[in-house]
Length: 149
Image 1 (cartoon, rainbow, N blue to C red):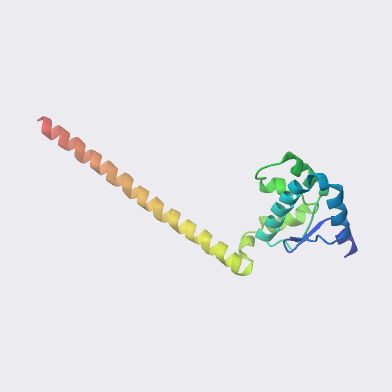
Image 2 (tube, rainbow, N blue to C red; image 1 turned 60 degrees about the horizontal axis):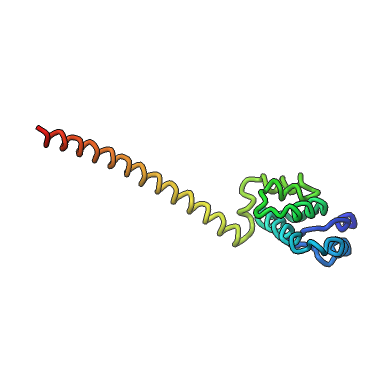
């Protein structure tokens, strides 16, 4: 477990901010700490969403993305900030992983199912609207021809 603390670590979606390596990282980057905290929070959110138990940060990449000041970094950019990217990617790529977080995962699953159901209902409604529009055009065209006679 000692090599776990040679890098900044996110465990169970929370950064271990009392470790000496974290404190040193914070001190060395105090001039840009606000932006770095934003990147770390985004990384914590990835870990929480996909139930990643342990993630190690690549401090240089975190500082790089903080200096670029991306408004909303994409998932691939965030994944590149992990030094154990392959392990974290395994969790991210696992189907249904984001639905395995107790009540929060249950709510995410319910929301996903509801959105798919609503999309299906809207597709049916749109198809009916197109059919009715086509029928009304036929009726209007027929009426227009009849009135000209």
